[in-house]
Image (cartoon, rainbow, N blue to C red):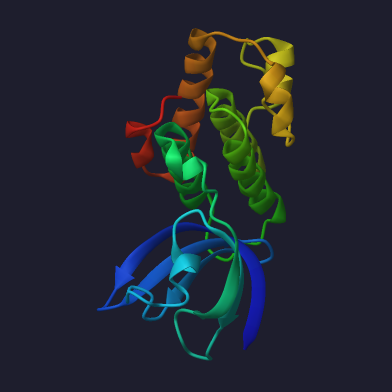
Length: 209
């Protein structure tokens, strides 16, 4: 069976001599594990589609009885080039992808989660770095996972709390706050994400939240 979907690469890891297993978050099918055959070869045509936090249109083939679908083609929509040239943005993108990986089960469709990640990466690409984006993305993802606390403000300014729980990240640029408030909210976010995901968030070594 062939099927197509838009997707964002969350992670890739080697398989055998030249393959990769790539974890994608797709628009219509949720998180999938996909075999990219021979993409570690130097001139592999599908290699760009297997790189972390690439947004693309993908074509897959799922063979009856096979554990992993295979990527058979597609095209890159965006590699977010400016984001890759600034270390804070780059590590923030790794954090966003890792959080999505930790908090979402395989094969559970969620277009809202896909759009959340897509919008966050696009905002990160175009706007100056802001730790408020990391907080807003994390809080909204926790909401979509059913473990958020949007309706139980934990003692923070109401305008800030509302802005951090909007799907439109553009409102964040008008919000003024202090480092202490960001740290307090961040600590609650991390605690909840680790508890729900059942594992530590490795990229936090490089991301300040």
